[in-house]
Image (cartoon, rainbow, N blue to C red; front, side, top):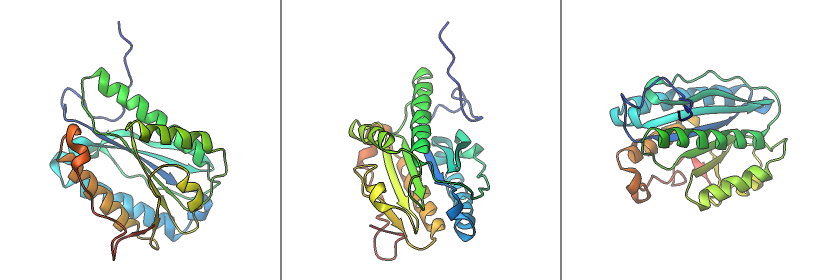
Length: 226
């Protein structure tokens, strides 16, 4: 008998055979995020859920996983469709093990793609979405190489957002895509952009995903700067 691959989330592929758009949120919860930053991040996560669940197709297609890194790396939510995603309330503490968080997120992507393939589920290119306000406190270059290889082979799409205090030079070395700097603490605007982009993408098909164009978050009045 073939090995049974683990299924993350509470939905069932037989009940919901829609193509999937998996997204790993890698969220910095180190001590420097304490106070208003972590509060705004939590509000952004709640808005993200509300925006996605309002779109019937996106609710079935977008899958979310949340990995935090603050002192240690924790998978606080394994992959699940938006219908079954309950935004966690995050707390800030500890150091910034960015490299370990990247490795964890990439491993989850690989495992999830194996589950899709085993169950005949098509999928969009997975998203890895990193938000951090500091500099890594662990070894991150090997993980960065894996991110770059994943993008080169079109196995994933990687996005990095630096909050005030982030080491933008390190973020530039993670990926071929230029990192974005969050304007102030506009987490709600960031997550609204993320949900809108994923809603838009979920209306297409995996074979057409490269034709989808998203709103530029660095436009005048946007939530990000380069």
